[in-house]
Image 1 (cartoon, rainbow, N blue to C red):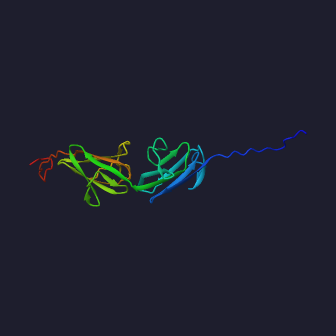
Image 2: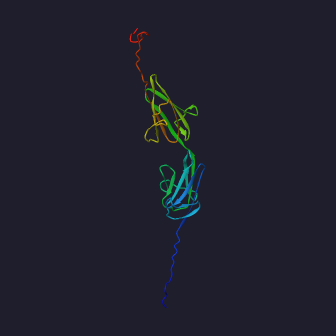
Image 3: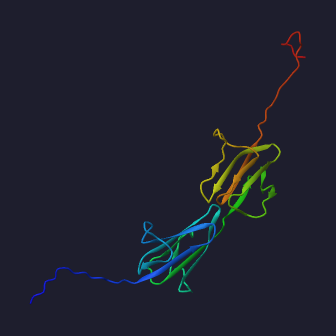
Length: 219
């Protein structure tokens, strides 16, 4: 008797782990397996060794405040068990080896604000009509910067630098340089404002009286 194998099927049972995730108010959290093309719902069973990514999206004027990462009630360690992106919005587990529970909280976004001028005047900052009491303000706050030039000087221009980027000269809608004494900004990034001054234009006027009968004759 010689058996003949017509069909064969090998079923390999791989380990899986339960992955749950949640978020607080003022933002959302999504889970991805492998890369960003495959998402999964909280409570899914994920194959052992999988790369798991959690992407947090704060609401406008909010930021990621705190991540809580646990396995069966035990806190996990940043660096050895998971990593965070530089902007704190993405958490990655490169090789899933245990059950996972991830939670993220959001908080108000604050930005630093500072104002400076050259030696020919000064500048002050106010919010809601009151002097700026701190160097940080809530995202979305309108701040008014007021320039006070010394006698004989006027505002030449304003520059604004956001998040250590390139200083931007403030301009009017027609493209000309803005040189008003008051600048209003809605703060949506770390902001440095600088105002420079220049001397007021001076003209020398010469005059004399002339004879009404003969305008070529000075009196």
